[in-house]
Length: 433
Ligand code: NAD
Image (cartoon, rainbow, N blue to C red; front, side, top):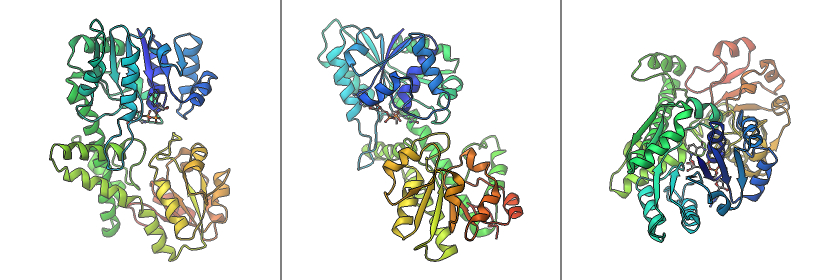
């Protein structure tokens, strides 16, 4: 199959690389010239374990190509994947302008029948409108079918997820188009679930909303554990043994971030609102998450009183480990509030630091090494559970003015911290003092 992928971001690039790995000929197109130039030199614009090697391998095998020219990308394509961003608008709804631009580019370019596959997360009904828009001004002999194929990869394990995902969802009202997509995806060896187009769109939002709900739920349980003297880690273990609940996504912490959960939960509230349904539960999930992001500052303030003039080490900046993605990371709010309250902030994240420099408050200082950030600080806050932080020699904390560690990801065991003699506060677990 000749496939074009529009957008070479976290989803588009991984889609292009993995589709070429299973034998398709793929041309990826992006409007960002700098990004494409970098990729052509064999440098991935994003940090994603295993991506660089697989990208290079398929470029060398002439199965994978990159361009900034849509016409070049579309000219011999049987299938065009749309993987551009659908960011949050001010009112919480999804901004579909990038998807619409691509639709116009496709409609203006294609001269043969083609299947357009939407990987981007789009509100229910978007693919139906897209099909109408695409076919509106076409030559009578050309037909464009539309398939919804929502993406479930997780940043940080995107390659693995492509080959070992739980399911591939194919939503189409055309049996023929759905069958073609099934054939394209078969080599991944992942179970394929076929449904209608609107249900496929909803599966993506409902899945993300459910996972976000699990996170906010366990975070509220953690907050109660804090007050009643229970340990949320033990509670989650005991809950997770029930197969109906399952152990995953029960890690208490300072909430979810990233490019998907925050915007997709708000978009689903909007989608419901548009049909006059008040999604009360999901509104609660969003509120809890917002409140949770300030938890470490509350704990810090409670412990040290005023933080004005205090030096605070912020360890981990990405919204989760194994990615350089800073979108909606808790570190944005935490560092902003620390600076607002007069703290001196020294941050460290080996992978996300360069992106962070363009996003965080300009008063944040950066350390080259984890140890240097901790140095003579008054307190250390852990925001991302990177392996590098998990494996740190705990004695390093003893170099601090007064060793106080406030951990937003429950990285260390309480026994470990008791043994090393550092004051330690985490989420939903008893303090070590
Ligand atoms: P991204 O911002 O990383 O990448 C989008 C890319 O599209 C950018 O490189 C941009 O330059 C390019 N682009 C925009 N308009 C274009 C056009 N007209 N032609 C060619 N390229 C164009 O976004 P992302 O994180 O990859 O997300 C893409 C979509 O996938 C979103 O809808 C998102 O919700 C969804 N999604 C993301 C993830 C994730 O983990 N990032 C997971 C599942 C689903």
